[in-house]
Image (cartoon, rainbow, N blue to C red; front, side, top):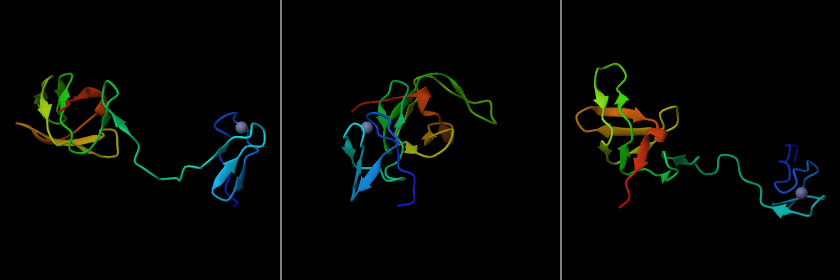
Length: 113
Ligand SMILES: [Zn+2]
């Protein structure tokens, strides 16, 4: 292993060494499984911290101006079947009466059920 090992999550020691699949900290004795890079997508959370997933229904929590048009997505607009994407606008969706557009997750709230 020539890669730099991550510091100990318990005590931040950098004298971490690897034994088989485990990382070991000689300073506090902590052992843990290193996270594989790229494993799992980063979580996208709505305005109140709910984790969003593909296919969720959300409502818009503030009026949002649609870029390049005079349309506004009104607060309370219900958006079905969202899709999570990478980027500044991390939700891809189709808004009734407006069409396909990107939303920012901090301006929506998940609808449960
Ligand atoms: Zn440690």
